[in-house]
Image (cartoon, rainbow, N blue to C red; front, side, top):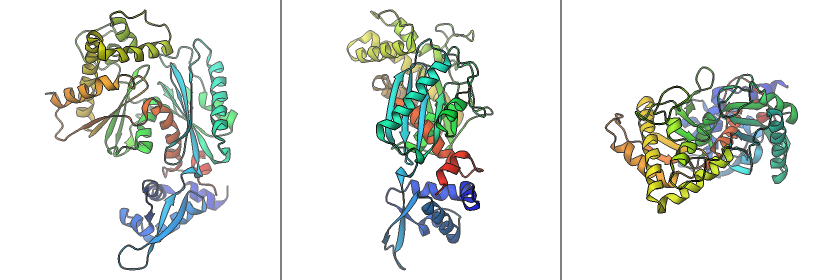
Length: 407
């Protein structure tokens, strides 16, 4: 790699900050404005922006008068200069997204997760679906930075291994990143699904996401993502956020940990379906459970018994949200995940009310509790956004940065 390209790929924190300011300025931003928003000198800003322009990531726009002095040239992001693929491996379905530099979804695809198949067969299905995603929109593969994969934990992110997630039997130390990297010739980043969803809210969310935010993620299981000062918490092994064993009640069905009252069991769709009056037997597969739960939520407005059942789930979630707010002192909580989507209409207002009225809430500031703008695809979109984040984070040179910043 040429020296100039190497320096660009390892441009450091200043380059990351400059790029982020341009990326977040929908109407463009001048070099002088960038310098004013940072402690970076005007000369350094000029050098960095020239590198970004040469790489095709940023373009110069019109010159705009802004008070005394000569007009300033505004800089704009080139959103389609680079892309990333995000894949969410969930026990019920696998979702694929192609995102641009703004985190906007250019194309998406989803399939049911093959039930009972060995990991290598699922991997082949993932490869075929990723190819289909790229073909469907005619994406220029030369502009692809890499692939991000969001998977249920535990995961070994350093080695790209899915490591025995409880709801994916047979996935024992599966080197998923290596398989995809070999097939596509691209760097692959594996992350825990709730961490990906959190990064997606920060990078691609169209709402104003606070710097200190928690994401409560309801999928086949329940997970927690937290970002403080816009940095997602990952923990020592990047397996942060297992909140399923948080005790939210004194009773409930027995959990695998030996307790009763665990959040993950009490609000699990399978458990709620089993309690619902007039409900057919609970399906034996994750996709069937998800479909039956969505149908159950649709019945709630006209069925008081089902409404009361979902109210109880909302109350349990509110207990967990209150705990999270107190623990991490966040100012925003985002509800997310594929199994939150059917529940949100019934539960969101009740959760807000319960949290705000809770005597256990001790933080001295208001807290916004809202719905994810990314919907059930949050983890897939976030997986792609994590590739972009890694490429432009300002850390030491990475294969993502090399591809992203090469002219």
